[in-house]
Length: 430
Image 1 (spheres, helix red, strand yellow):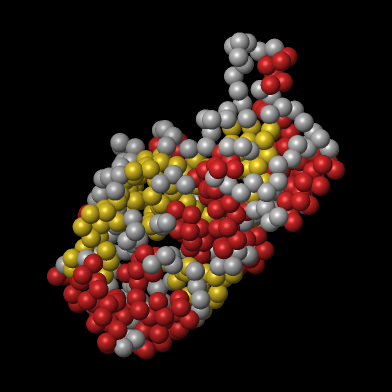
Image 2 (cartoon, helix red, strand yellow):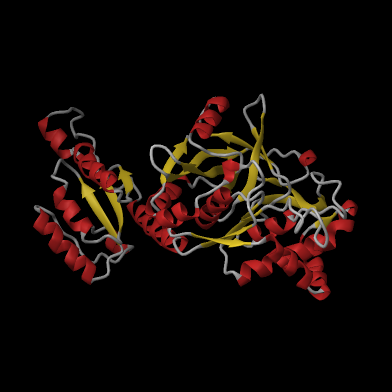
């Protein structure tokens, strides 16, 4: 505790010898506005002493520190086991927290080695992020693409579990918003787009329409106060007939770059996964794992969506080659992804044995390779565990569908903490 006073406001410090001690400490902590509870577990102790305090502080983030220390004489005897018994006392408490569904961060190691202050900050951040997500609104324009049951999400289950609200909209709302966008606004966005990206000659015919669709989606997002969204563009009101008559992939990517992620084909599951990963990690590239190469890399690409926060190097707006027969043919951004630690994030809807939601998280890294021929943002990804085929198999068995979010950095642990706060399961690959 003495070390924490330099970085944190320690409002209560107590040794809990009974459940009554725990209740008294909680009352004092609650009165003083404690937001994080740190439990230092050094030896076997009845967990009810601590749970009495935690039960009285349901809104506080919890950090369990199993404070280990190597025996001074290098052996293991009664004294050493008592001194270094956090691995006995720790699971007494953590098993109870798991049983109760209480989120917690776990720190294992001796004083002076573990960065306890950072773990406390991370636990507090996870609680705050989850609190913000519980108030989030995710728009759904239309229904998923026919046959795509793998992307469907039970709106009621999502709200009961997490507090996140799905906001249904008709596809005609985007069409009407498209028609309402003024030429002056399109011209302004055109200037901004040319300043931010190179624009290929083949993109020119569909550029103005794509930018108009982007502004229409921005208007709907603002009007409905959305934090994320999904749409199925393959309907007469959007891609298959005038006035839009193109795939609005650029629009989805532009909103994602602005911090409000959008997905295609009505994939609400991945829209929620992107919302969470964008809040926690600061980026969220919508993608498919298109190909497992012989060298163990997986090719990350999409049908045209992008996240400019993740794009590396030169970015070029090009004609979207996935929809060449569309009148005017919409545009997309082509770019690479820089090498570095990375995390893949998906959301699974599990019905058996009981309906629940599971965040599926995979550790790995971006390789720095890119495949310009796919015509979108592309990059190579390697799972942290080998072989790649087994890692991908674990990813699939956890329930991830064919879409997921790619995020820069290893954010598996904070994602697991946020998932716990939201009442989700979390499966980590790697």
